Image (cartoon, rainbow, N blue to C red; front, side, top):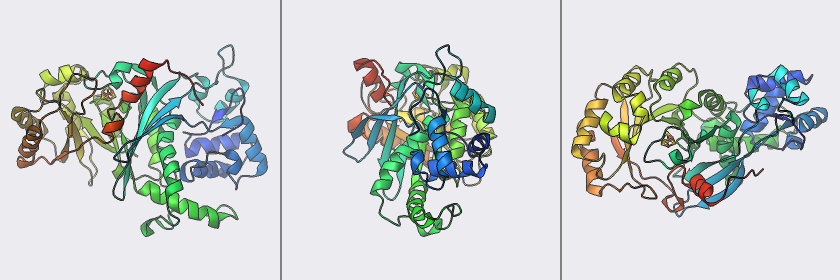
Length: 423
Ligand code: SF4
């Protein structure tokens, strides 16, 4: 972590260009920014002192003027199926002075880098990230907002309302934290051979040692899926989410593949259109959950703003890459949206789309007044879709025994105690 001080510049979440500009602003060569970028995202090193190829003078300067602020792990729930659910505390940062103005330090920083976040005090919040181990690959589910304003009726996060948007750094940190924990368990030389040699150029005399760690780190990222399906509607926090994704998907950054990162939206049509124009973007999933407007208006009131006709038109126009398909998520709610007639309507809705698949998600009973669909209803639904040429898969949510629905942990904390700032 950086030094304790009244105000400092947050490094986590900064892009390669921003870090170069920041280092130049400190009177250092721009390539020092590349090195900081590499340490943060590829090496997952968050202690400035340990960034061994930076000159001692720069390390001292960074310790005085910058910080690397990781979310505080308030709780870590381990499920019987091996999933780990993190409740992360995101604290306020003293980024404004007593009068509410940016301090000298943040003014100095903002001359060199676009850094609006250093000028704004942030509300404390708690979000969840879930780490799900699998055969050869692991999946990390992350949040993009604390709470959510979208108000889906089957979602506990909706009950929190929108607390605030997360910054790019807070989003990236949710991937870095579990990877850092995994890294400790990774056997030496864990990188698959096809990734060998893809890491950055040697930058210090201790490169051999660094290289070994880096190989392990790069291998882990290559075997990791990330889904933006935790708290929040990613497309309503567009710029920070994209800034985070550019770091996550950069081969010199965290190094995830766009094929292994999925952004799930409730159907924010302008956001879908904007995402389609991005040069670097993940796969897209639409949280559908209903077979007609009447049903969706109730389950997902956002449908009144972007009804199915408009949403499907945006899906039709979405520029899929040749390896890509659109995923539709469909939570199966017993007696609500799970009949054979629903399945046939879903087939008709998706018929005009080129390349789709549907994930059927059996309802995870909890505090909300919905029931599970029967196994027969789920199978019948899947069969109808598949027979009509719509690939459909049943996906059980992981970590049921540690409260798997997004928002459950944060809501529990809100109900039991007021949010407090940790870390
Ligand atoms: Fe928000 Fe997603 Fe919950 Fe809907 S399902 S309220 S978009 S967090």
